[in-house]
Length: 496
Image 1 (tube, one colour):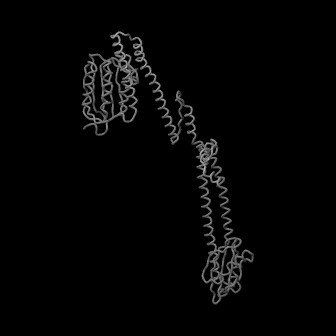
Image 2 (tube, helix red, strand yellow; image 1 turned 90 degrees about the vertical axis):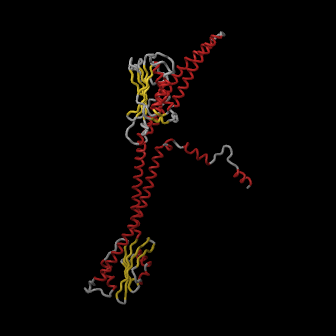
Image 3 (cartoon, helix red, strand yellow; image 1 turned 45 degrees about the horizontal axis):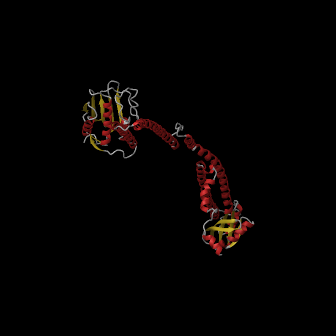
């Protein structure tokens, strides 16, 4: 006893498995087809169909039993009605006169003229004692034994009695005829009626089973057809690698699965663009950083002991490190522009924004700087980011102009949008390059200066898109260029 108690208190020993462990591993031991969504969905549909069929059969049986009871009651009422009509209006076929008080003669005539249907029987009582019945067979005699007490009733009585053959429903009516009275009883066996109901239910069950089997085949095939796009999606996802994101799903229809396929294709488009951008970014960044690193390494390796040479080398190295720092800062800014919280919007008067930008831009290079546009109104924007974009455009304009050229900074509200632009009269941009100037590290070939990281216009586009706007470029060779920030304006921001 002590040993048994000790074992019950101990946990499972090494090598033993617990019930939870067995249960947890059950799903992994099932074959793949049993764990597939197709099988689970088909089983769910078939389980629902089976439950509906079972409920339908049970409801059908209950309805048939209820209607059987109603039909039996109607048959009892009809036989009693015919008997009463004979007793009240009929004539004795022997004498041709009304029956009068001769109740036994009424019974004899009724039983001779009316043949009971299957399961039906007539019983008569005269003076409280059994008189005659429609049959002398054993089943009817056993029923008579159960209803013998009805011979003395004075009111219409209905009910059921149970015999070896099953339940029997009866309707008994007393008939007054002077000093002597009689009772007429009609009975119907419910066993035959119930047998018919059960037979109908068995047929319904058989039909339901056949329908269920056919439905199982159809459901399994239909579920497979419905889930076919999911299998295609799975196969497509498996075929995608980091080096190949070109696979797409053929979309047909407008249902939820078609929408899922479109969403998946759209996700692949974004992933392909992101991977392409990442590879291009890594390539460009590596190329841009390689040059200053090489310069710094080369000068440090050959730096001598002469103080003047050391100062020149340190100044050159510092300049290259500063350029690398600006490049890293610009890259981080481009990355943050894709995140929420990049902007801090506030009410920005266009007049103040344009004037401040002009004041700062005029220190970039000696050019003929001008303000343009009506500059009236207030917009909701991040003042510092918008000004940063405009200064990048101004610096870019200065690179492509000479001291005799004019650079305009303008702002206005038009057609529900804010337009802020930087326009110059410089060398312009070749039409073949205008679609690429906003790419990272792209430099225009006819630029007169090589300073910068090649990220300025990319930053301008990122800031505009973060505000929900865009950048427009109008330019031609020898006729200058105009870069315009087109920003949406909220209702009520146009005039304040």
